[in-house]
Image 1 (cartoon, rainbow, N blue to C red):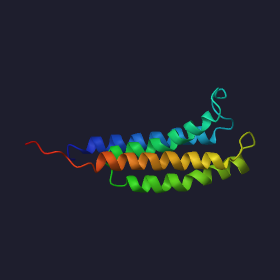
Image 2: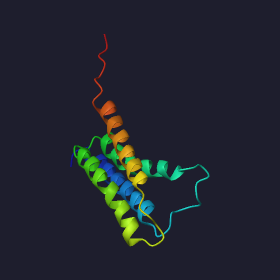
Image 3: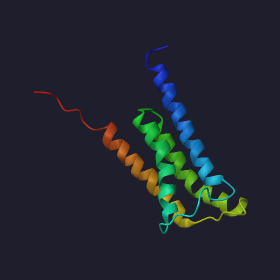
Image 4: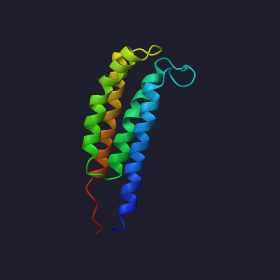
Length: 123
């Protein structure tokens, strides 16, 4: 085991936890918590639960973080179809898909700016 192995396992576990949170938020029989007092506040929640796995994998410097981006992009419309067809108390919303994709994209762009930022050399 290399010294970085525990860190790798920790990042992988954190990504799995972020995906589990995403699943609970998306697939709970009813929307968790009280309705947001902010109009369309649920869109911010959608963006955050899709951004979180991308951020954790990307900022954790996992080489497979682009796969997480792709899976989140595919999961966005699939989750709304499942909500619409399989969950009686939930409904599919195209704007939720847009929020999911926006969260995924913003997180991926953020990771690229942080991870690929050139290091400054000291004079």
